[in-house]
Image (cartoon, rainbow, N blue to C red; front, side, top):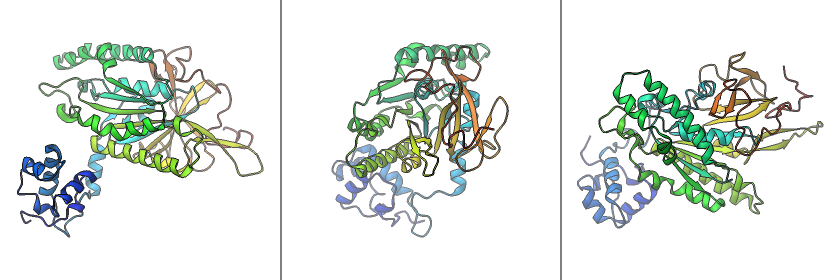
Length: 417
């Protein structure tokens, strides 16, 4: 391969801003850059930082010859390896973790939707604590960004969840003679967990969109999450390694108001979804959208309806994993609507019995629904604490005791089997 590739700059996987700055400065191909240092390139291209110049040079030096492989392309083998190495955030509910393929995936967008009071906000706060579990104990040891659009975030509830998680971490460390593990467990304190949740209050859709657009800059200022490696045992490994989770609770609230221009609303939502996907892939963070539900009237003589995720069908493409949370009598259930990497048998051949229940939607095959509880200590397996738990972020269990009607026709049409 020649030392000065002829690959055009427009074919390199550069940020649009960086690409435009290089083109404006008169550079056209990767070969125009490879003889420069980052400092020289930053000085030659107005507005280009040294860090951006170094990144551009790394792309230029690795640019393929035309006809070898399209810039930015990955082989299926590389994608498979990337998926296998993806870290996941535990929910501390084993059944939910299994449903999600091991937990909430980093580098991807996950959506949880459901009726008020079912535990969506509780799950968001739980994940904000769990992402901080030390790497030596199987966690990510990272911070969480929590964007609150409804005012439902409760610091005192986070304190309860953090206290329970700290006890579990301490008990796990006590069973080990590993001094590194013990040291990381000792640093997992209530104070450190609260400091590890970066809270933003979005008062309107403009603030919400601005936060999503500027999160990349915030994460850029944080330490790189890969510094400690998967095991978290490297010398000088800090407990908190940077932001690894972004929670938007809820993504729906400011977009369910009376929008006079539906087209503008759809474009803004599509832009926010794209920002989230780029953030997840570029920085390896987990993005979690909390969504509400709405009633879709059935187009038949029954006059019935079904509960569906809010924001319309096009929004369904915003996430790679989508989970519905709902009630069946007094029991909370989680139902996997879609996933890019479904656990073996989770959708096609779900477990039956206490660990999983089989349900039929309005159309399609039977899929898995697993029970979970919201307890005073946080999200846990069903039956792990008496009394039904702490309730959802927006109040008590709305609809508890009534037959579930989520993603299915009315009970008289399709009775539960």
